[in-house]
Image 1 (tube, rainbow, N blue to C red):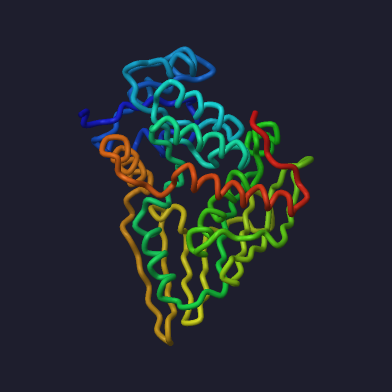
Image 2: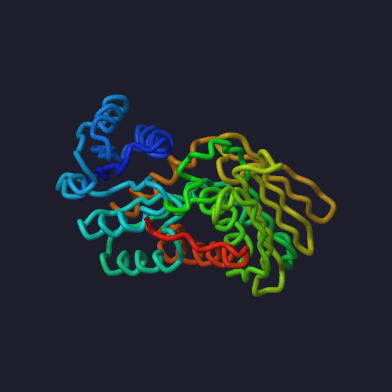
Length: 327
């Protein structure tokens, strides 16, 4: 059995160096072997800058490369499903950036193809692989009967020509940033929530620049998701869980390597926990390689991605906005 995974990149996206190239240098079981982009010149420049050996003229050519085991898909949201399916058809394992697909229906098609293929398909919610994520779940178990789960991810993106504001490419704040707090409230809430209400701030027809959603879980406790790419809330990255015995607050649960804090108030006592600042992308890449090489299980499966996309779709419906569509 090979001792490393040879991975090719579909597109020279801005996220690739942080999410794949630099982590691969620290994870010996992964080699970034090839890249393709719509602009061949850009792909060659990207390969030269990051020491990638091979450049392919197009995505199809990269998928046909017999010397690749897996593909990383960092393309715009509306293209995730199409190229994950194409990679599976070509016999490649897939690490697909979040959100997994344009909507739940497309995500379900991809999940079915993944099951039928027997290949590894991982949604790249890198925060789930950092030790902080597992610890949050443990601490929630200390809080007793849950009352409320709150997760927020807001950052400023005033460049309105950015593809993340493109309806045609399945953009919007909920898709780009809000998928993180949706994923986290599902993780910490202990069940699949019902969307009770949602309100969006718009940037163009059908495109949300901010979103707030109120949820209810089967156990009776409630949840809130808040996200923004342009609103009065300039920067907010946090989570809060209230239980009968106390509360947990987390600063920066989604990128703990940039600095974080977990604060627990329980039965009159307060404690602060911190974790190592090793990049969550390195933990994720190790888990991907272990799944490909050794068949180890991992949390961000296609089925988990379908469940997240169902909540996202329901939030869009509740806000009176159209579901995102594949590009």
